[in-house]
Image (cartoon, rainbow, N blue to C red; front, top):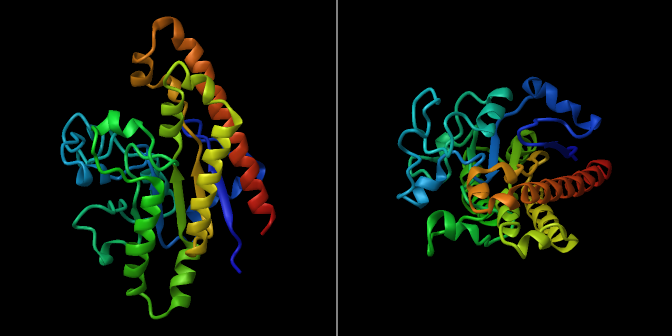
Length: 276
């Protein structure tokens, strides 16, 4: 059985948490046939526009630093998934799963299923703030469901047998960046900010996240890259919703929550790696 490899990044710091994950430095030398991406706006490759047409990410100033201009990503240039795909040798940008032009022929190098506003929990209330009530919400579990029910069957048509597909999936990299929106919403109100550092919330996030990872594992994934939760306390939108005197307190709480969750994820991954 192929060994499962978990690599864990702190977003922005891009620091490896443990010496056992030093393999990630040589990713470019790996034989990586494809990369599959799940998560939120940090790694969204443009899916949000196809689900929510009124989103303005297809126009400037979004994409102002991208080689081809606006790409429907929620940032000015390449996102972490773009840089990672280049590092492992993927020859082109991953197509967005929700793009009608994405076909079975275009996903052999992988596909980006990430959706802006999503979280580990199925219904973070922030999606209503971001895109309005009634907006179709594509959570992490729904992204994985799309991969399971649409991407996998399409890939099967490109291989002669299940053994070849299994080998392809085992060598591919599965990237996850999720949890920042859950944290931001849980810590956004005066009552919630006290609740967001409690063990119950952390355990809920961890249980849901590991459940989704196991689903992907059972589908054939063996190499995982997990990004840590970003420090939302520095988010301009988040700071703008707080009274000036509460900004530093909120920063301290969100930083603490990020660290607590990161430690729990690392412990969980250590157990998974050592059990192989």
